[in-house]
Image (cartoon, rainbow, N blue to C red; front, side, top):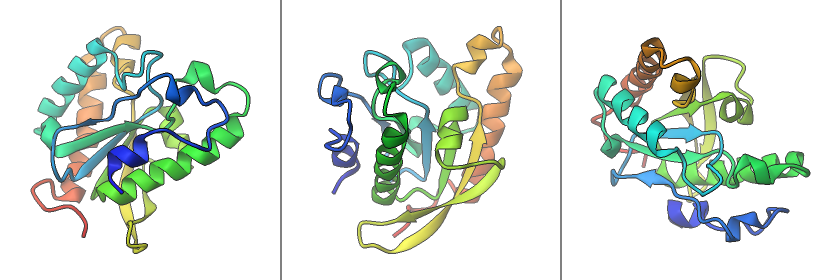
Length: 185
């Protein structure tokens, strides 16, 4: 199973909105060491707005990384406006889907960007680990860290300290992941 398949239509989702809105995942690297998990896609299925994606590119540059080093996806498959009722079931289904994606791409580090994605994995700490099962059912723990969502840069009045903070969190995960190493086998 490939990450794109795991990220595709969710047969269990009560909303079934996912068939009407194709949601992108952003990956450029063949073997990304780092997974970036945002909260939820925009109403039109983008992981980040165009402006926020530009900010994320600047953050990657500040962290001395590129899109080649990361795989980005949303904790929730559907845009937040469509989740509404049945939220508890959707969290259960989407959490399982997110863990399957992590098992397929086997990153060495995960950055959870935003409060929703952090709480999604029960993160009450800045640094923690997430148990992930590969398609071969081998379980390993991946280093994870919470950070701001890149859109917070705009909400903060374009405070450059926000970009720096996200970049520092990303550098920390990259260091733990050994950014030049190969993905988990």
